[in-house]
Length: 516
Image (cartoon, rainbow, N blue to C red; front, side, top):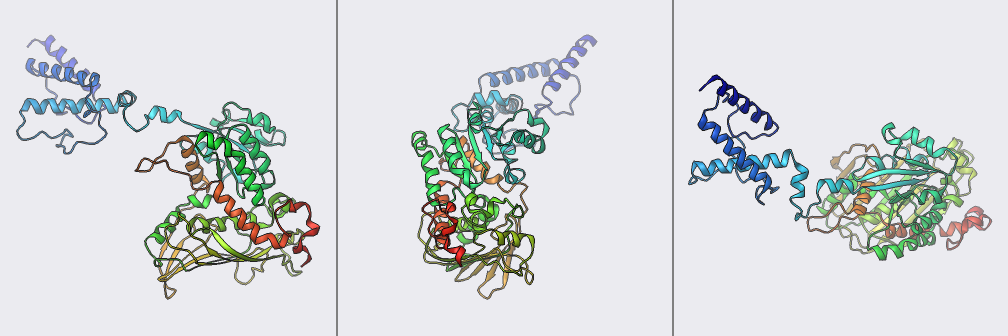
């Protein structure tokens, strides 16, 4: 063989090796770097031809997402003992072609599998829900704002706050610099809702504005995710639900989601698993909850705190804090019925801390006790019908002795489960029937506590996730559970406000609770 011929063959070999270096399967040993003979060169060209044929006319087997049943040391599909060396060579070449098709031309391979039930990667990435936020208070800075640009299939494109320039300032303060130019700030709700790039709206304003804003969102034809409590009372929540009924029936798709975020906590999933496994027995016999302190409520030191103004919130802190616990009980065990309650103001001269002083100057309730029973339903994982429920929210207690308390206890024939109801990350403890702790589950603190629920809401709007049986995965918090919680709150607070079927916040002089 002449030197020139050897150089040509060496060049051919080098080009061939470089072309295939991105794959993990090689037809020849990488150690065989000697010059190819005429015979081996012919075989190499035959392999290249086979590779090209499989790229152009892939069989269903080549593009299958299922791995081969067995492999040899080189990663090729193993040939049967009766196969000839030529058959094995051909099989190896087919696998090699498959590797190229799936690793270097993924988009092309996806296009060739249009009959698959899975959405192609390129189309899935284009199926983005473009979100806007109305109201840019503290809840949107860490808890619930960032998920709208961090979650899969989600993009934040607009924000709105009535105060001039406040929306732009929020963007500059909270959004990564690289994303800021893609978000439009507004100070007018009508202009915000006319943004042609907007698909869905997160309503994060105080509850007093929810009804009006949600009705406008519905009129604009946008999907809505609204903060809790959905309305200041039951009838407002019903009106919000009605605003989306027409489009929901037309679209055959949920149009209203509610921000009861604990339904999507990992802790909640663990709790459901423990109940399903019979950790405390085959049924729940009692549920007790006790809270002393503010329950993590934010912004209550401010003289204009909406959480302590019935005109803005529909009541005291139970509307902002207690609604979570009521909804969690509803989700895990079933609806609350046979409700009896006491709600009052317990302001005492000896309570002098700033937060308690703020509670004292407001005229909303600061203490609520409630008893109830669990009604049957079709969504719980354990029999809880008839279980007794006892809850106490003492927002103005003297915490000097024991400190704040936040404890939910679920009891059954074999023991109990204890956990903090207001936390996404504090431990869950399992106790035996003698009260001894037998197991404790710990959790990491999520960076954004609302992120899991917002992801599920986004996925449902996109239609992006399905159960194994092909049915769509549903976000767990919707209008109907928000309405049940609103009606429980009405039952609990009706005596204090002299009924809640009207705009009771406008007649504080008639509240029986003020006269106690």
